Image 1 (cartoon, rainbow, N blue to C red):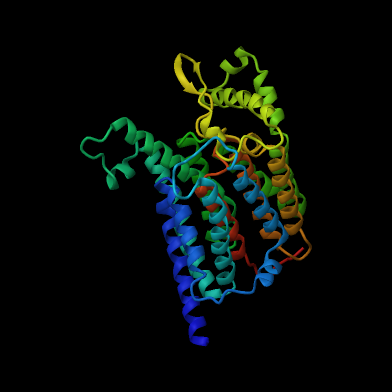
Image 2: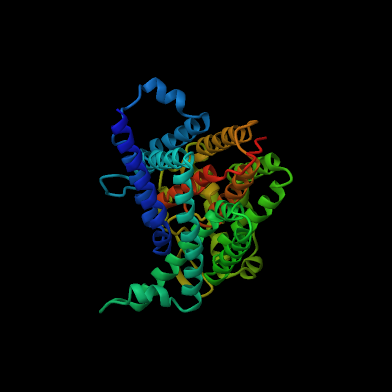
Length: 415
């Protein structure tokens, strides 16, 4: 039994090294491979382990995760009345329903190996070096007209230059989003090193902000700035700021239809005064207000927004999709597809998560600081950018959150 246990532990640690070491490369390449890597790590964690009894599994799962599971199950059920059909063997709803538990299993491995000092030090070192290097490379790539990417992945014969540049813009945008989500745990882990670590932490924050500006990722910039503000305030009132971050997230979901209502009433002059990308967002949100009114309780079903084919003309560009794959707002995405039922389930899950995390003695002060930064960054970026059902987005959120298990100071300062 001892040998088997040792083999399983070594296997798990090796998988984590692979995930941590590959993260900078995957994020620079657009981040889509993060879901597969984190998910495979989580699934492979089951190899060599004896399955526990079902009742023990239920007892071990925290209530917030149970509520998250109910929310995802409702999303899966809604796919049965959705007009969208992917044609793939595994539907997007199935991928999310099966993928999220796999990502959580990877987070479980991080927690488990963070308890071993030697393994923790190795993983933290890989994480910090990798993420700092990622911030430098993404910034260099952005300001050098994608010289870094073109060096390792040059334009192939017959390849469209326009399409190549479009891919590079999207890849660096996703990579910058990864940096923003990882900002809170990585900067804190640098800071906890003391001495030069504090200087590097400040440098890392500066590089991440510079990447947001250079890649023109306004959502990531807003998420980064909000994370920094919440983290600074959390040093004074940690539990209050964690609660505030979750309240922001809940409000962004629950009151999303109000955003759509006001967007639908915005004047043409007001829209024209906005940057082009923001005007498209506002047109998108206003259009979705009527879609929410069509099915306010149950929604249109999972991935239904992919079937909204209405177009419009904006600033001389004809045939622009009113909804391009997703609404660029998590709250509206949930309301349109899962209805008020889905929105309520999402908010209930957030309430349980908030109460779980601020429970006395559960997390240290420094961990609460990180949680406040991660939560508000996710909330802001999800409200302005990515679709709810992008699997790499779920994977990096869960993975970045798992980094709080590495935060151990001389005085745990549990509160």
